[in-house]
Image 1: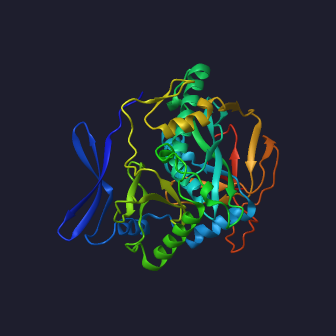
Image 2: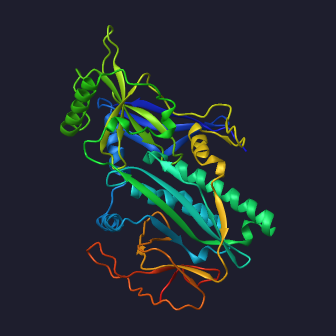
Length: 416
């Protein structure tokens, strides 16, 4: 059911020689301060210093080990990943919810590194109920901006949960507490930039901003190229300090780590000449904080707030606080492309020599499937070497295997 969202505001306050930025929201008349969106700079510094310092703390940098694993994923062109945990039995809500709220979004953010322009993915859950394994698979979602990842996964999770609940009630007359999920499969496909000289003006905006910043640029290509070169030069050489004669207003994008909402903040505000108002541009960066392009804003925009009335899907009448969530829901065709199938009792799926992909955000183990699955019948012998050896090269010779069957396994990975 739709509930009205809290009203957010983003405030700059000056106290003495300090300027402080903080995020607030009001719920039922009470004012709340965000603990993650707060920074202070000297009062005479430009607002860009807020975001440059916060970016150094929040930007998702890869460690050498993570980069090495990503190199293996790219060299082997891995597109199938499993999250496994046998302790999740009888705790479907914990495993599915926690994986979709943290582990899957982090995996997709990781896949946006190394020049990924966009990606598409779908999620499949292996549901064990009454000694029978069912596969509930979502439709495919296209993610065109890294800021859209959390919302895309969240909408997929909600539709998956609804589909599983409806099936359990209608076919088994049981609830979620009487089944378990010990495997979640994520299938994804990355689209990389074809060259370093690709047309960056075609890169999309985050969904939360696409409606608020609609319209075509009124700036010529030559003027935009000159502005882009000036921005890159002064950003690199002056670290966010721009000359007074750079008569444009620049804005940046920030995301609240608590509420995940996006907001537009001032980056460089120039004095306005009466006969020629300043143009406004939004700075767009990739997931590593590297500059991509400037997007012209016809009017400065503030925080993206929910309206008093919900957005309603015309097909299924589902209601949403944000237009962006409705867009993802409609891309998934209200869940019509979701499927639910059963694994034959005598069939076992074996994914051999998987690559361990461990990430700090999730307590559940993640594996990348380096080889196509093997389908066997119970009792059939399949020799598998499962000694994972850490090598500096990108060749994966051995590794654990993920086994999926109707049997209750003692470990998420079976070592033979």
